[in-house]
Amino acid sequence: MTGDDLSAVLLAHLPPAALTWIESARAKVAVAPAVIGELFPAVGRCCGRATLRSGHAAIRGWTVDDAGRCLLLAMLPLPAPQLLVTVRELYSNGDAAERRGVLRALTLLGRRPGFGASGVPIVTDALRTNDPRLIGAALGDYAVAYLGDADYRQAVLKCVFYGIPLAGVAGLSQRADAELLRSLRNFALEREAAGRDIPADVRSLIEGPQVRR
Image (cartoon, one colour):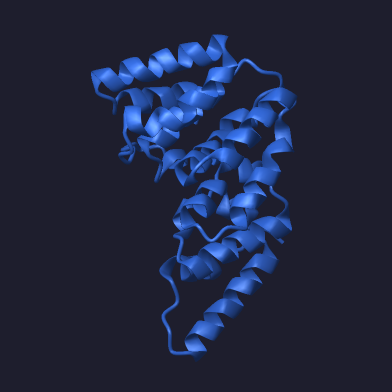
């Protein structure tokens, strides 16, 4: 998913007034990066919070305000160190929806020169929470690229325990290794012993081909 792809999906969901607002906001951020502190929280109010309807797997479960916030961050004309400072501030000071927007945007920001894995602490912070919205948003393509194996395994197991569908976890077929599969099998055995159902997505994963050793 590129910024252009995301922009096309979002614009198809916006009424004229919201479209005017987001285009104006993007233009302002491009020339005066500091205004993002005012505009970022306003995205939900000005553009809406409806679920995006799209065939793109990379934005499954995204909302209009998620996409709007991603596009604002993508417009920031900042070198990587300053960009990271701004992103951290928006995440630290934001509510759950704003934090989710930052997490979603990391996939686009991670492609910027010099940014790379510098956003991983934001991902790991979200994974330490008990908020399924943040946990799910943290496990996008950025986590696939940069999150360490141990943290990725722990995050998947946390999704299982919190009932977060594994279909929303990016890169599972790439990152599932023997240790993760062992943990999931142990989880399934414990569920069976307790007379409880095994989630269908867990069963599908542990019964499917093992893709990593």
